[in-house]
Length: 224
Length: 224
Image (cartoon, rainbow over all chains, first blue to last red; front, side):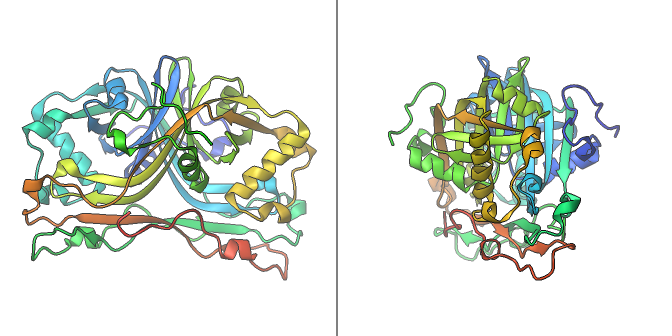
């Protein structure tokens, strides 16, 4: 897969060495995320809405209710920006100025269109479900005609994208290292707790292995 | 504090009963968040960039390097949308259609202006620092003239806002409760690990209590 071209749209200007244009690196950030923030413009007003998403090759699938303002707008083909961010650590420098965070963030630019074909729509439901919880599609009841009709599914092309990441230790000014101020990284992790079963669970149904052992993406790495 | 007025800008259309206009509830979501996603428009193109933030009364403070595209745009007074989202759980229903997430999300609309006054700028630095890590400002080296000059600080008015939340158990269709499908909530939590001290720490400097005992906002509540 060729990297994304650097253009005025996607170029990382600030701390350019933290910029990343490689598709694999960008897609990993997107795939590890459980939700994204979708930006769109209506009457010159920006809106940013959080949403589930799933990547399918070089596109992003979004879904929601037919009445959703976000999806109505996205499916009309207006430009969209989709951002996924992972916070990995608070970086506490000796100086206020050099405080930072360790993170991975991907910013995608594209245009959407509605998925109308019934088979493609069902497939998109499957991809979205298995993005959140691989194995779930095989088990849960599939959408019926009424549910399919009530749901808008949208595919957004990834026309351009870039990622920005920071990892590693504090970077202080040389003359500050002697200061008697604690410095270091406070790592942040997303953790899944024990599943809470529904009060009305049918008898004899155990927590499936794919839920019990659920995890997602990279674990925090020490100092990363 | 009066609630935000419901207008076409901020009204929650989909599942309207999940909408929230109370300032206290909205501000709590903002204050609990370590980062936000800022949306702005340039040449009809939406951009969504993640950023540290801090709330100061009815405004949001943002900061960054002078060359930052985001801040250049925000300080010019164009409309801005700032969104904070907390993911609290994956809601796994018996049907694919009723899968959902438990979350708290606040969407803010406003306009920015640059903070130019030196005292106000220093105060904004303090508020931002203590938002991320209360107690840090007292200890870390404060910004010098060069650092102040290299940093843009922006104040965004919160002209309008709303929040949307979901909590609680699965909601399945009545006829699906008998299905032999596991259903329930997989809680998600943000957790801080043990602080990693910098390799060049001055001797005799211990981890401060405000870092050792760091936590933020609400813990996950069972079923919430």
